[in-house]
Length: 199
Image (cartoon, rainbow, N blue to C red; front, side, top):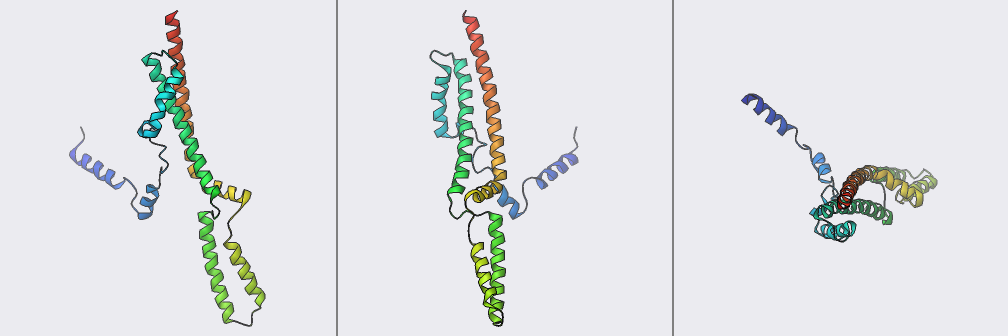
């Protein structure tokens, strides 16, 4: 039996180690799983309406309640798989369609550089003996900092920025594929068993 002191210590330890403590940690935690892929398909009313017709199509006419239930499991996983792939597509398409897309890290870096360029320009204006060539170079540098990547560079930037999100979506997709595989196996086994019992 656990002593009262040990129980109290365990509870205090659990309170101290539960959840993020800093504002930054809480903000990061709040952004987790915004795509809703961790929720079951049946928790979404729009998606749950698609399950029954797909299950009936999979089970076929005159299916037993057991076969229909196994077909429903396949239908849920298929819709879940489609939902994951759609979320990935929407994530990438949204970033690719944004004409002003820039990496958050690159934006921070360019903002810092822009501040430094402004400081240098202010110093140059105070020192008129420096050549106008330096001013023109700084102006060109400043304009290049404000440009957004295009073409393959933009796509590579997007993929680099979204590595963690895409990896999470890959895990959801693998999980859905695995669940679908086991659901199909159970469905096939039940169909074979029903066919052999009917002979």
